Amino acid sequence: MILETERLTLREMEQKDFQDLAEILQNPNVMYAYEHDFSETDVQEWLDRQIGRYRKYGFGLWAIQLKDTREMIGQAGLTIQPYKNTEVLEIGYLLKENFWHHGYAREAACGCKNYAFAHLNREKVYSIIKADNYASIRVAESIGMRKEDEFITRYYHGDMLHFLYSVRR
Image (cartoon, rainbow, N blue to C red):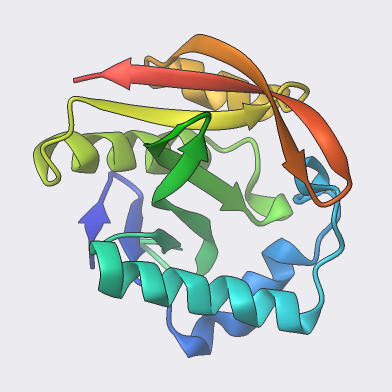
């Protein structure tokens, strides 16, 4: 276990999490911000990338589990992401659709923020959010983040407006 909150535990993902991860990444409602259909190969590459991040940085996107059932309901964590001519430590989160609107994303994101400050000794953390992803904007703002910048970034299908949110320790 990496961290725990009132209702959740976050742990490193493993190969056994492939089907749960596929349920997230292959759901177009969950992944609309990416505007990309994820194949089985894409899911495996995503999982391998997280495992590589754990080795390289000691963090990445972690499996979110409900404490009471141990069911994997999503992923949340910290990643190094490009931003303009630098890199930022980003809080990211994706939940299975049937676990939306229960406060789990906010709870996991807040846990990740606290982890970045307490365990990684960071002064500031960020979230990069597609401009029309209102749910993620609400989560970011609910953990104290404020919009710092607007910029265009390229995803699978072209240029998209994104916001950079941040919060200081």
